[in-house]
Image 1 (cartoon, rainbow, N blue to C red):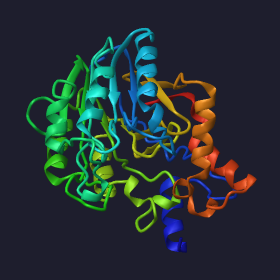
Image 2 (cartoon, one colour):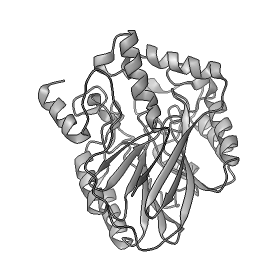
Image 3 (tube, helix red, strand yellow):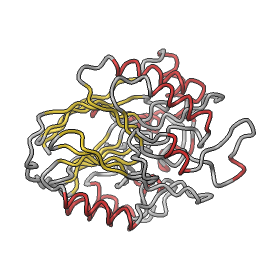
Image 4 (cartoon, helix red, strand yellow):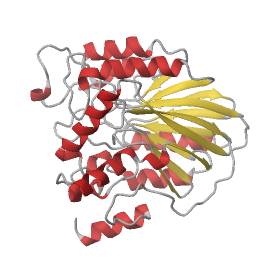
Length: 356
């Protein structure tokens, strides 16, 4: 990485890129005023990046046990007390397969509470024909939205939506996917959606608007800066989108994303708290439960309840997956492995709480 890019990342993250990877911590806190309508407290869960594949093999993504990971998580969520809803933050499928979508929906439909889906970059037919497998039928992005209609998607055919959870609390799902892009797995928040989001937050500024999307608004490592090998974990127009969210920080103080396959992490920028949540089927294989009120947010992350041997296999598969390692820790060595695990597990934030 050149020195200019490194300086930009340090400026954005407020962290030192020293010998180990530290999770992104606090920025300069600009406390937003609490929203006007007191909705008490609401508990909800977030699951992401389960990449279900009914004919899969284990690798960095534990595809062979992907259905088991999802089924176990649904069972565990049904035993959580007072959960109001579940967010599913994209990449439900390995690569847009209809048969995998049917398996996912069968499992998610067992939830005792409503669930809301947004699309990920793996949830529609690959634009590159070489990535399509002969034994599967494939969904277009429009067909994926239709398939999960009623689970967040509102029947408009659009991949974004807003719902009233209760008086004072609204949910906004966004879609930055690029389904026709043959190589790029990143995203862009389109102008149409930006205009719609601006209007939604302006019209409902007296309520708390909880926003979630698959792609990220901020980078979580230096490799995700423009031109880096993992730049597409962050949307191309991230600065523009963050400026819009900062404008409405009092109405939308919490944003949740998936896509990055790391343990729960968060960063506050200009009054907006950006959270990234873990994948169900790559190390550390976790899901998250949040409790939100007008003034605070608390969370815990739980390990998927599959056998310990599966977790150990996932951990080893991550360490052996060269691409997923940060560039400066590319080589297998005890010190580098420790830094890779520190970044992906982020055990310091398994539980926590913040003011919003």
